[in-house]
Image (cartoon, rainbow, N blue to C red; front, side, top):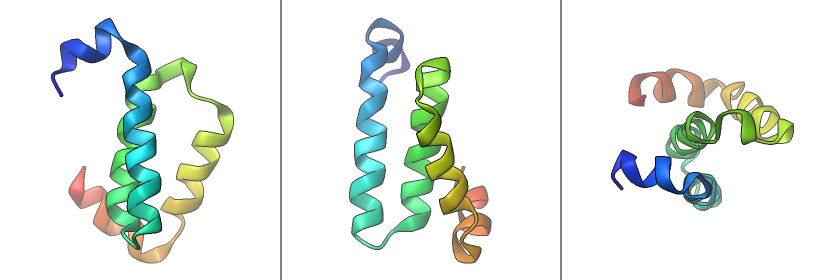
Length: 72
């Protein structure tokens, strides 16, 4: 999706959170972390505090951290 769409309709950032949830449910925590991080980047100050906590928890998983840092 073009970046211009997010500046026009910031609520589209929720798509990345939803994608992350689907990826996590499918056993893809690294991809989920990348999607969650994209959500936080786009949502900025509008992101709820619990979303940051969720990302921190996922980052704490040993296999996720290194791979997600490579993917971003």
